[in-house]
Length: 515
Image (cartoon, rainbow, N blue to C red; front, side):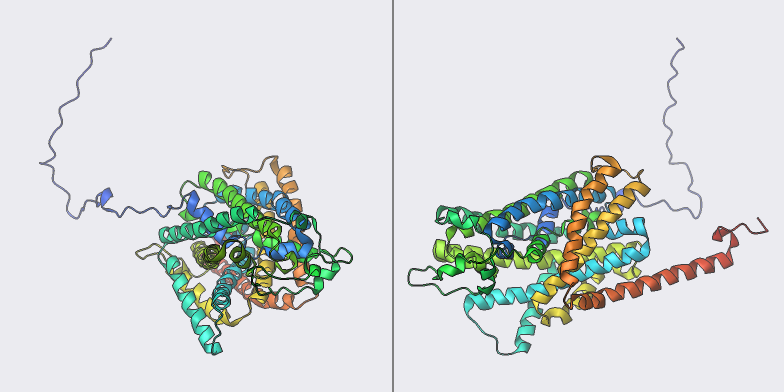
């Protein structure tokens, strides 16, 4: 074995002269250490849950559309055939492309910039309309509970404006603040309805109501709630909860209500650049969001049906759970359910403006929108320009009726989900080399089969919304800016490409005589 030679001793560098004009780079630790990936499972679940389901509010239409039997079966079956496959696809693509902008970037990779702008426009409309609905809903809850009337339309608008300003502040504060607010609001939504469900199940007295199906006579039953009697219960005629006639299930309303309550999973992808460890967080967050949505719709709705306090044909009233809670648990449960309802409304606004702002910022980062919208150079690392532009678009819509806005919002949401399904199939085929930590089993064929039922349901919802009404006109007006800007953007890209090819013929990809 050769003898080991010891290394020469270290020589001091004090005698070395630094060349003139040379400056040492700043130390690595002097750079501000900041990672935008701060969201864990709890934050993603809270944001997605509040944007989509948000609790049992508005789930009464599922019961009134088909009756308790059909409604409860639909609540259980819909997520199995629709939400779970779609959630699997969202988790796959979110973990493969963990970027701000989410599904707009998926569509850009799959179908190009034009369709990315279309789906981005639709999603932005969803976010803006969702924000515009919330102040009116909050005001309606206040007026109903406190029996108050407003003096004028100006007073009503100013109150809505104040609500919108306050609820926009978390989005301006950044991802950490928004996530903490959403987690707290989710707890305020869930805990009161846990108490409500247990307490109301204990008072259940009409198991036979759960076996009823909607019949034609139910169409004549109004949704207004009768005032409570001396015993605190609400008096109704027998025909209110035992309608006769032929079976008359409103399939369009039923599926629309289900898609509204179980929708919004794809919004988790819009802030993908804020999620730490996307491969672990996204699949867990999507699964938990689906489970929370299912339980918070099924349990309180079933308990309210069995309590036999408000007849199920009147479940479409927005205050049905508040009324049942007051009758079952008095003032205490009334306040709990009221707090939960307000938390649902507030959470929808906070989640909507946050998701929409990061979508706009992500699209700007990929040069689909003007670059200033991607600016995050501020203390909280939040796209404040995108937040303020979204907020400005909400202001003129505060005067519109929430019923009209809900149907338009649901239509655009279904269109977005349909294009996400198509993009998933296209990307699996065109970009198989992209690492997918979560992957729909069965290869390309399994993915195609998994999208068939969701695609059929989405097409049916779109047909039901736009057929026989003026909704297509409203949808066209709201979607037209995206079409115009998409064509303008395509023309601009082509013009810039032609300009570059004139300056450098080699960039055109055409073999010239000089080559």
